[in-house]
Image 1 (cartoon, one colour):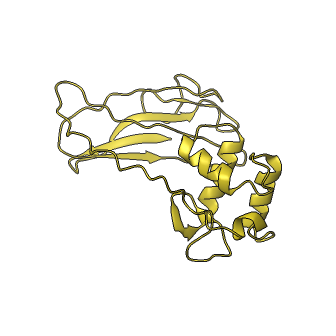
Image 2 (tube, rainbow, N blue to C red):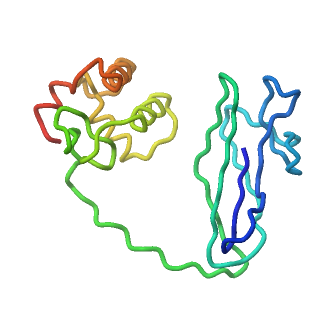
Length: 191
């Protein structure tokens, strides 16, 4: 995995890299401190870790690029909370005011096809692969924003028992595969 940046459309510069630390077979990812393709630094584990790296240069635009390559079975990598922080007297524009909060809940039923579940944050579009991934992440106890969890708990509680459990995850996976239809308690309501 490699993180690079381009400032003002310039050449890509390496910022952070992770590579295997062994012979090319069943090796662990580790920080590649000199960008030579070999993980020689801190090893990645299942525990969440924070990595920081400086970005050299100044400009008015920055493109952050992350490239990942895994090429065998049972390999995975995840990332969360990528941040670009400014220092050294940089002036940042004021943040936009927050959008007004809505008291209306998003419908669980897809607006473009009332026989299907809606996707998170867009009731006009139907449930898709990203939603199934989010359900797996939620079931695994990994981080999702509270409003995302609330939507999926409300809309993907297939058996309508008030909780999202393993059987609900299985049912939603079967729904996505076309083996189950929209749950009766959801199809009878629009929210």
